[in-house]
Length: 368
Ligand code: PLP
Image 1: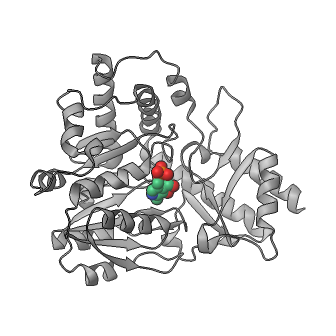
Image 2: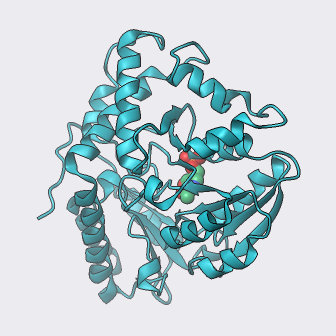
Image 3: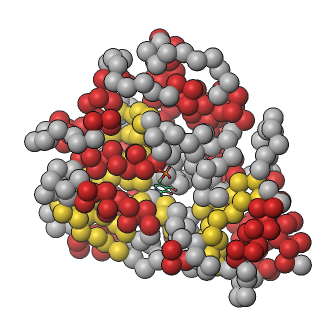
């Protein structure tokens, strides 16, 4: 039986693909007194965060982990800034907006970008990645493509990339902390997420893990990392050597620490089961109202961002407006899928029975 987490505050029902409702323990941690970013207590808290991130990402025991002071996009950008030099060949998997964002960023850092694509609503085929590897020194893939609700087959893609010797960068923004993720076993070199997604912490931090191979690639650069703020060397100055690099947002660290601890105490496999259960319950409950899954291949269905094809004749804007008036936020499609689908965010604290029951009651009422 799924439990709702008791919250000290009345909550707007956020069923968007991020941000998610803040975990009550993270919300309380925000109230903690301010300490300096060089304070020993903050360094001790940081070390716990680094250890907990290793567990969440399934890394090797000594893998470097850190929080970047920015959102998920900064995590994405830092990977390309540190691991790409002008003229490098980069292969990017693109089956939605966030894959396209990766391709754009890699190009801005001077990469010669090639793309492996799949139609919207479908997963990237690992055989296509194998066929297009060529001389790529880096491959990039989004694990859960938020714009379409597709889960790409990451272990199989990683397998193909590992055999080529290229580095692999993974966007785990909608998956880390709620979907199986094994950085070490799968052979991933750089991974990031956003604090405000599956961990239900406030936005503003991008937790990253960086493999030794990726650190070696960075150390062998011919040119300095063009993004000073997130240079891997500068990050290690603060997170390993405890010397000043920039002023980290200490109060966000408190909240992130609390949210990640809560996630690990609940257990990663319990969280995976929780989101699967809620996602399937919603699909079943909305079917009689005419909603169908947008992603037809079950194995490619991302439970944390459930993409639903809207019933015929459905007035998307009007219904979402009416739900918002009842303090329930849901998100529609992006670009080509606008007006065609809804994307229900079921990450972190959104994957609980109360939010979806509230949604069901409101929809039954509105669609009568
Ligand atoms: N990657 C994916 C898969 C996302 O869903 C998002 C945001 O929704 C991002 C990257 C960018 O994250 P942010 O908006 O935190 O910068």
